[in-house]
Length: 258
Ligand code: GBP
Ligand code: ZN
Image 1 (cartoon, helix red, strand yellow):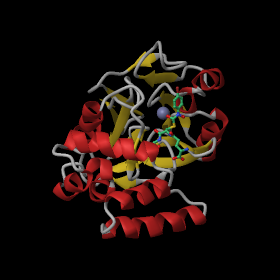
Image 2: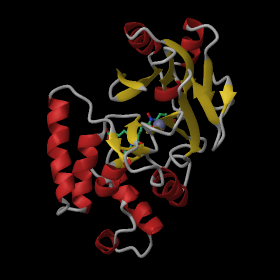
Image 3: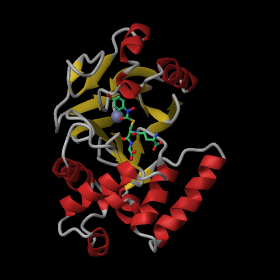
């Protein structure tokens, strides 16, 4: 499995996933199709399918164009009505094949949008796990609750995604890491792992490099939205339950000026 970042728009990422045995590839949220098609050509791969995480234009807005540019391409997403250009819907638990050696598992991760899908990709034996989380899970953060509740985001982040194997590599939809880690320090000023990752992330961005991927293990140590069962954080924000903490931290981040 090969994964390439394709920076788009201001701070979005599309990704190209290649099954090396066949040269077949998938494009995740190809909002600027020319860029991901260029990346595929550069690596001698053929894009066979699109994986759309959610209906927002900065993720699904390139689907119609990529359908014109790549005849026969399948465009997967959570909804035929809402996701522009969607040809095939996926539900939680659906599996897709990519080339001969890769498997893609659709995970319904609602709250940022109702039909949001994350895609868990492994080789056929379950090795090299990677998950494409769109705007549900960001590095050290999460998406705004546009179409859902704290209960749903808790299920999506702290149950569905947190249950994936610890080494799973996380590829998210935006480069928000530095801001998110700065906010994380307002919640946990003494968390050494956050301090270390913030210095590293600033250096990456300075050098024009991505801060992605992270891993589930790193997020459990540094992402305040995945640490809502931590008693020290519960005390700090004055809440008794994980869901209340999640609701409260999201509210704080919505109003945080950074
Ligand atoms: C920043 O932090 O850099 N510019 C600010 C925040 C995802 S994009 C921008 C922002 O609000 N981003 C959204 C988000 O969820 N951020 C998490 C956070 O702030 O912690 N989008 O483009 C957003 O989903 C969109 C598109 C939204 C169509 C609604 C519609 Br309709
Ligand atoms: Zn979004």
